[in-house]
Every structure is written in C-alpha cells, then in structure tokens.
Length: 472
Image (cartoon, rainbow, N blue to C red):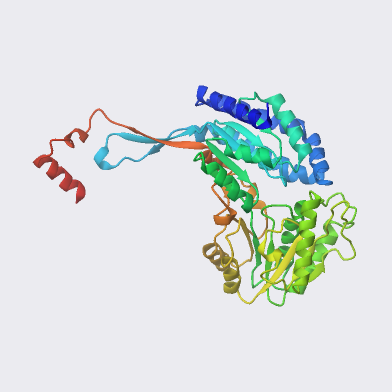
C-alpha cells in the first residue's frame, strides 16, 4: 500500500468514526484532552531533545517556555470552560414569533485536518488540536518534514495514547502534504507561509473544505514618538529584542521590523547591544540561543543580508565580534539601517534574527508606513500615551496586538489568534477555536400556541391587514 493509499485509509477511519459518534459527550472530550496533557507532561524531556536535534540546537528552556507551557495552558483552559462552551445558547425571538424559542448549538464538524509548521512543531500542533478535540472532532495531523525527529516522536506518542480513529499523526514530505490538503476534511487548519497557504487553499477548494490559514508576514513594532531618551524607550528596545531573538527569530509573530522616531536609531542600537550582551553573554557558545533550523533557511537569511548590503543598507552587528557559524547554523542578531523598500529583507517575511530599523517623522507617518503594506499577523506598539495607543489601535489593521511588549497576545487563551488578509483567515485559541471547529446550528422551537397559521393561503383581507401591520 502506498503512502497516499495509507493516508486515504486513515482519513476514512476517522471519518467513519465521526459519523458513528457524531456528538461525543463532555466526558469523552475531557478524557481526550487529559490524555493529551499527560502525553506532553510525561514526555517533556524527550520532546525538548527531539526539537533540539531537529534544529541543530534549541534551548530546552525555550521549548518548555514557548511550546509546552502554552500547550498545557490551552488544555487546562478548555477543561475549565468546556461545560459552558457546550451548553446551548439562548437566542432572542422576534415579537411576532413569540412564544416560540430559539437557541444556538455547537456541533462537531467531524474529521478535521491540521497542518503543522517546523518552527514550533509541538505548540502549533497542540493549540489547534485542543480546540478540535474540545469541539468533539476526530483529528488527523500532518507534521513538518523539516522536524523529522519531533514528528516521529509525536507520532509514536500519539499512537500509544489515542485510538487511530480518534487522533492520528501523519509524517512525510511535500508530496504527502499535498495529498493531505486534498482530503475532504470537514475543516482544515494550516499554519505556514503565505505562498504555501495559497496552495493549501486551492487544494481544499476542490472539496469545498473550509480552511483556517495561519500565515505570517511582516509584523511591525512601533516605538511611540514620546519615548525617546526615556527609561520606557530602553524597556521598549529590550522587549523588541527579546521577542526577536526567541527561537533566533523563527517565530511567525516575531517583530519583523521596528519603526523608531527619527534620530533615535543609534540609541536603539546601543540599547539593543546591551540587551544582547545581558541575555547572551557568550553568544557564540551559549545554550540559550537557537540555531537556524536547516541550511536552506540559513542560506536564505544570508541572501537577504547580501541583497540588502548590495542595495546600500548598513548592517550593524548587535553582538559585535561574534561571527556567524554556518556549520552550527548560528546567526548572530543584526540590525539593518537604510534598507531600500525593494530589498528582500523589506519585502519578504524575515523569520530570523535580522531586524530592519526604519525612522519615522511623526506617528501619522508610522501608521501610514504600516498601512501601505500587507496587513500583518501581529503589531506591537510602545507608548504611555493612552490617546496615541488608541489611535494606533483604531487606524491599523492586524491579526493581533500587544501593547508595550511583544509576542504575549498569542499566550492569552481568551483572545482569538489569527491573521487578516495575506497574514491569514479565521482564528482559533479558546472559545474562538471551539467555534472554528464546530458547526453552529440554529434551532427554532415552535410553540403550540402560534399565530403563524394565519399566514397561509388562500391570501385575503385578513392576510393583507396582518402583513400591513408587519410592514409598518
């Protein structure tokens, strides 16, 4: 049997199981969520080691902080709120239809698919999986071929904890991914790049499969005009640099570029160097700084630097004297000044420790700069002025926002997470994820006492009088 045949048969088992049990009760859903929680808890060390091997190096501390902790939080949030989420929600009925009643019910979609990227292979599998299981679905997950150790371990752990018609993990290359996207899922969630998102959506369209696309893009950080030279300015630089250096910048919502008040560029660089020196005092050898995941991604980032330099950009080392290490694929963080708008680093999502700095004249100019570009997955604004903060929130469009920090909105289970336009469509996390993986069924209950029988043929004077009242 070929891999594609096996994939089809695995999907068929999930689909049949979903039809045999269309509405798992709360106890079943909670059991599955707790099984996932135990799987992650009992295998933290093995998971961190698998991810470290896939990256060449990634700190186990970052894996615990950025993958395992938010996964556990998502599970526990769902367990706390599942009873409420599953409860039918009363809806209002128009005066003309009373005393009938209406309600909204959330019904499992059935068999859903999740396509996982390489940068956070556990959290970006677990977070949508929690939502899908909480909603009562059967799930098939396609792991990334660029994290083979993690994918193999996760597949093995899942096979030991779940029946194959509850939740199953698929490994394989881009060919398998294409076949996966063509399966007639009841819903498909993809996390990855915008170009691949186009392909996934096109493949899903053949089956009219609804999709949630969690893409990327160029997420800006803006330092407000009133912070120059202040302690708040230094803190803003710290939070931007820390957010940028997590996983060596290989984060879909990492600050992609920073807008600073004109004249503050050097101050930003000076503070950024202090932050790097404090967080990574021996950057060439520290276990706390991640490698770039593979040679293809490392060479891509090097090409961005070469292209920017050829176009006149100034490349400023943020860890002076620390060379890049192509063998370990360790790329020290750098800032870029005066990069042209047509430079690759200004057009493409960076996904690495390169940080363009763009000076702006006033806040209107900064907002305009962001709005002339594709809508980002995340936006970060630093300011103490409530009016300026509100202006940025009102006049920009992005998937999510963190004020006076970076990254942290993704860790709030009661906030939806998703993109807009080129950065994605649809959202999940918490109740938003429960809704994404549910069919929202409207239910109308007719009363024994109802005037609706007056609105039927043969139409006559009484009908005319009644509709006249309705239409006034």
